[in-house]
Amino acid sequence: MRTMTRYTNASLARWFIILCSLWIVGCSSAYYGAWEKLGKHKRDLLKDNVEAARDEQAEAQEQFKDALTRLKELHDFDGGELEETYNALNDDYEECVDRADDVKSRIRKVDTVAEDLFEEWSTEIELISNAKFKADSSKKLRETRGKYGKLHSSMVRSEQRMDKVLVKFQDHVLYLKHNLNAQAIGGLDAEVVSIENDVQKLIADMTASIKEADAFISTL
Image 1 (spheres, rainbow, N blue to C red):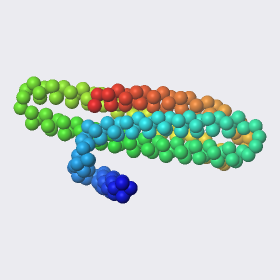
Image 2 (image 1 turned 120 degrees about the horizontal axis):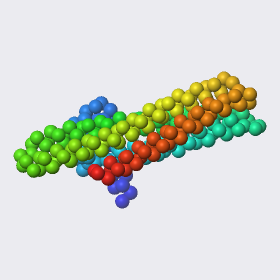
Image 3 (image 1 turned 45 degrees about the vertical axis):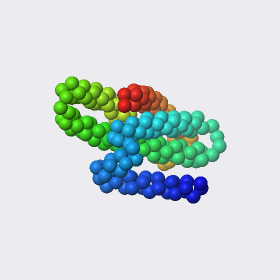
């Protein structure tokens, strides 16, 4: 049994490596063909990627909250190891960058699969000879495109907000690195309030995007 499990896992690992390689080189037909052999079609892949985008946004939300909390702790600093607290803030900022990159990468994948699905769907509609079936399928395509458009807009809005927050975090982290003293920290209270407001807006945008993802998933 262990031997069989080991071979099964190895086989899945090989498939995963092949699929990733195909995606990277942009061989979309081979990529989708490989997934279809595993029983997954474009609609399934789109659903999987939207779910992943939703989950990655939720994780990014928490990381940005943690970074904001650390920043506020640094500004409330009342003694102890100032550099240690700063280093923790810098770690949180770098983790935010990583989370943001994950979200951006996933959004690109969602867009690619969605457009490929809609293109395939549109092409196949032209092959339908039954007028009623053709009209129904065309209507469904329009509805799905419209719902995806709302999801896409919400994801892009969150992505743009993330970039804005990261720029402010980076400015703050670098300034503190160059001026790591209580006096410099105390002079940045207004900036902390500005970042906090932006993070709250980011969280709201991400929450809206997550809800749009759930709504879209329910239609697939």
